[in-house]
Image (cartoon, rainbow, N blue to C red):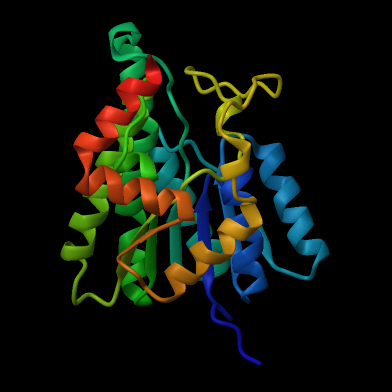
Length: 264
């Protein structure tokens, strides 16, 4: 039986851990050849080895999305090595935590450089190749683009920007054969809480996100790949994420009331 991504080439930034790693496995299970990118090359090689052990074809391509030349080179390596590009997933990102009055300009620049500019450059250099094969672009946003939390203003601002970029790209690419899917996850198992404000991974950092609301990464990857396969324009999940996103968009006063009361 044919699979939805048979003979397709998929490139995933932030592919060495968490959601990116789970997406790599799910796309491979759907028949794709997968290229994973990130800064930690040893993690990328682990993903490739795991996929190859299961009979899949995979490629590790080191890439720092804050370096435009690195992004351009990564895309060229994927296309040159694997013969083209059908799906690009701009997944690389992290979270700067802290109240707005405490964050420095460097904190803000670091947050936006990765989550916004890095994502935009991923799209910029992938789109010409996606046009050749009427491919798919996926941007990984967050429910935080619709409902905010005190202490995460920089992260929410970055994801609001991702949502805007996704909406603009969906319009700009209309009629080209290329589609843009912006995906807004709720709480998903990942290493995002173990990365500090400087972007450094520390496995000892505590993940304070609510564990009872957390989806496993593999479960999340299945619904995300399905959204890309169906070329949806925007897709929000989990159940709690959908509720939060709806409230943030349509009942901001109620959200404000709940947050200010709970903070007290």
